[in-house]
Image (cartoon, rainbow, N blue to C red; front, side, top):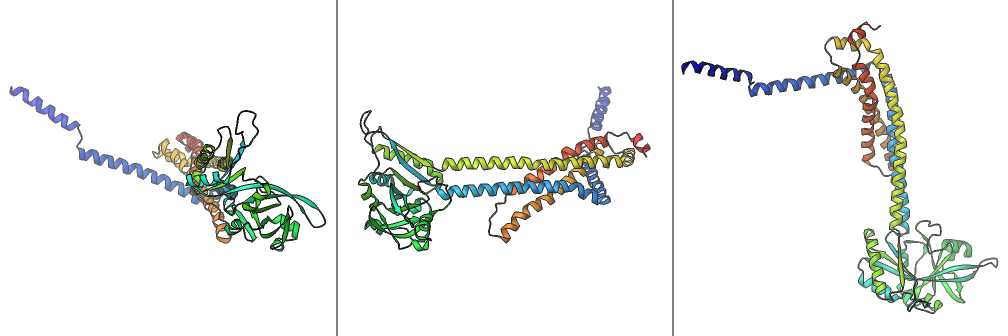
Length: 438
C-alpha cells in the first residue's frame, strides 16, 4: 500500500503544476490587453506624425471629403425645405377638410331620373352625430352676368355659403370682412369677392369695399375681398373671379333647399379619413339606398406629395454620394503614393518585429483619419449654412441631425473601403526587398 501513495501524490503535484493559478491568468490577460492597447496607440501616433510631416498633402486629400460631406448635408436640407414647402402649400388648401358631394342615383327604380340631393338637415345630422367635425358649410353654385368697365359683360361664378365657409376653406380676408351669423340670419345682401374681381370691376382691392353690384337685378354691397391661402391654379370650386354671398340669400336664387356640396372641417388632421367614412354613413342612412354620395379629402394628396419629396431627396442624396466616392478615389491614390514613398520605413518596421496586421492597420487608420477629418469639416460647413440663413433671415430652414450622422458614417466607410487596397499592399511587402529599395 505504501508503494502506491507516492505516485498518487506526484500525479497530484503535476496536475497542479499544469493548471495556472486564477490570479496568474487574470494578470496575463491584463498584460495582453495592455500590449494590444499600446500597439494601437502607437499606430495612431505614427499616423498623426505622418500627417504632421505632410500637412499640405493631407489637406488637399481631405478637401474632396469636405466638399462631399457638405454637399450631402446641403442636399438633405434642400430636400427637407422643398418637402416643407409642398406640404405647407397643400395644408393651406385644407388638409383637415372633407368635401361631401351628391354624385347621382335616383330615389326610385331604375330609370327614375329624380335626384336625391342633400339638405341642411343632413349637415345638422352630421354635426350632431360626428363629434370630430368642427365646422361645416353648404354651398350653392350659380352663375350671373356682370357688366365690367368699358361695357364688357362677363359670366361670373356666384357661391352661396355660410359664415363658417371662410374657416373651413382657410380663406384669407385681404380687405374688409367676411359675412357673419347676423348677415346670414337677416338675409343681408352682402357679398365678398376675389381680389381679381375687385381689380377688374373697381380698379383696386380697397376701392371695391362698400361698392354695389347687381346679381339678377338685386343690389349687393361688397363688404370684403378674399383670396385662397395658396394658389390652387383653379383646382378648387373657387374661380379666379368669384362672388360669395350668404347661403340664406343664395337659396332664393335657386328656389330650392337642396344642397349639392357640403364642406366639413375636422378637428384633428389624423382623423380625416375615419371622419369622412362616418360622414358618408350618416348621410347615406338618411337617403335612398340607390343614391350615391362621395367624399374628397387631401389626405391622399398629402401622402403622395410626401412620398414624392422623400423619393427626390433620396435620389439627390445618392447623387451627392458620387462626390464622396470621388473623394475616396483621391484618398486611395494618395495612400498608394504614400505607401510607395515609405517602402523603406515599412521594411524597417517589419525588420523590428511589426506584423503585417499592424502595418495594414497603420495605413488603414491614416486613410480613415483623412476621410473622417474631411467629413467633420464638411459637416460643420454644411450645417453652418442653414443655421446662418435662420439667423440672418426670417426663413426657417429645417435642420436634421441625421444628415450629419449620415455624412460622418459615410466618410468613415469611404476611408475604410478606399484605404483597404493601399493598406493591404503595404502589409504584403517583403521586408528584405523593402530594405533594399532605393
